[in-house]
Amino acid sequence: MRRLAEVGPPQDRELGAVSVVVALLMVALLGCAAIAVDAGILYAERTQLHNGADAAALAVAQKCALNINDTDCATNSVLARVLANGNAGDRLSNVKSLLLDKTARTVTVTAGAQEADTVPNSVSLFFARTLGFSSVEVNASSTAQWGSPSAGTTAFPLTFSICQVQGHVDGSLQLLQNHGSGANPGCNYGPSGAAVEGGFGWLPNDPGICGGLINLAVSEGGSDPGNSSPGACDATLQSWAKEISLGRDVVVLLPVFNKVTGTGAGSVYGLTSFAAYKVAGWKFSGNNSLPTAFHNTSPDVPSAVACDNNCRGIIGGFIKYVSLASGFSLGPVDPNGATVVRLAQ
Image 1: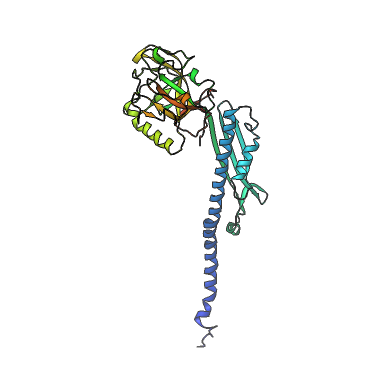
Image 2 (image 1 turned 90 degrees about the horizontal axis):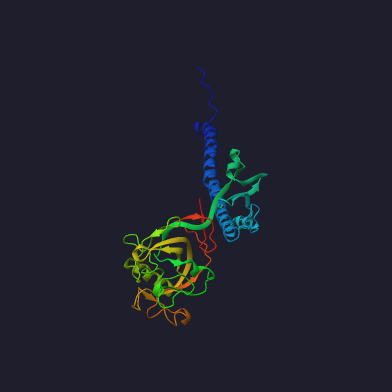
């Protein structure tokens, strides 16, 4: 029998098979590269877009909270576009849409990536091109809301009359007395400068904590007839003193009432708003030391607002306040109260 001539060594016959295997593996490798690199690009782009959408939504909400007719409280807000673009590393982002509901007090901003391959709001891809994907649309949305707190937990159970707030929302130092001779002239206060006969503006605490749930739609019944701060608030006052001593601001939302009925522990306060108050000092007992007294006399505060002897009260200033606070239900903007601006999603 004649033997067929061998074409070549056995190893030469395997070269073609290896090439096929490598070619097949390259597809998988490129796919992995597309996932690792291109997915990273998309993640980074979306993060930038989300930051831009957050900044734009908050900025528009702040403008609306201060003035509903502001030119940037609008669907064509220039400020929104500047912030959406400014948060992108390539400065090429844009506002795809801006939805504004002034009645519901919400604004939703959707930011889109730069245009790539004539596809709006898309990102060019590198490795994925080999698989037939040249670009992917990338968007990010953010919703912000604004309004005045209507219900929530007050960090300090002390209320003041609206007549002490009106005309003073400018940050200037003011002494708010809840007890003392000649306290709070012009306000309808009871004897000895109390908010009501036998009541000194202290609201009932939730058990074991300093503060409690306040709902402005419901008159707050009950009052602590003592003129000293509740013992549960000692830790809060110590914390305030530490922050002020370190040069940091202490801003609290204090409930404000516009009417009060009853006497003593039976007093009922008609609460109307929360006012943002920057605390500078206080005196809530006859003891001139922490925690019930702090920075209540000169030189820590001007003598015009000092609180000493029989005086009981808090020293500070009402301020126009914008916050990301999330612990309050929001209602229409109250010109005498605090304004809260926060992300809704």
